Length: 232
Image (cartoon, rainbow, N blue to C red; front, side, top):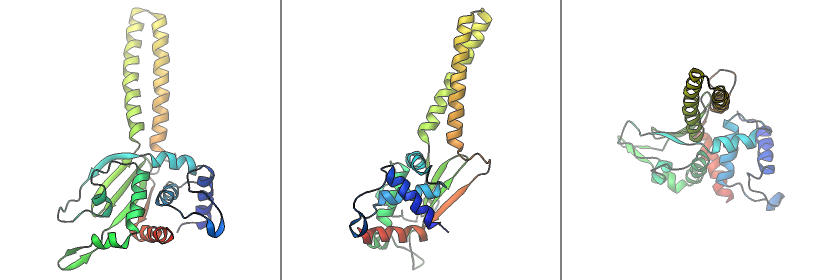
């Protein structure tokens, strides 16, 4: 289960970082918003501790869609999130905030009940975070939307291309006996190697070498979403 004391500590850390809604205390305290719930959820799924929560939410929350796989059975209608966001042009943070908003609305869920053989079928949803490499998969009615660090991937591709060019310059300068050009090429190779190292660490995350996954199921999402709706 989820350690509630850890949730409180993480929430406090995010609030102090300005990532959660703030205001008066006690009965006049502002209600948590769907975006607030999304940030806390990201921190919990990422295995954050209070000292890393703010950075973790900034990193994971900014992940963009890198893959979108439709359900194999085309007769299954899209769930509430995909129906409202058919292009899924959003970040992970925006996606989770939308999910908490939609799944907290009973009318929305009722509108997405479909029938199979005369039996009512409710929309199904799960959110799975994976380490090594880092990604988050939202599965709704069989369709999968994968979020990853797209910007980091692009930066690594650029660094790899730059390293290839620098290596070619190094070989050419060495062959020509141009020591100054050799030194410049070596400096560029060192810089691109460091960029690739940083990018790889950011992509892999967990250093244990073990692939870690954490999943939030629909049965855990809906109570949170409805509590948010009731508190609005």
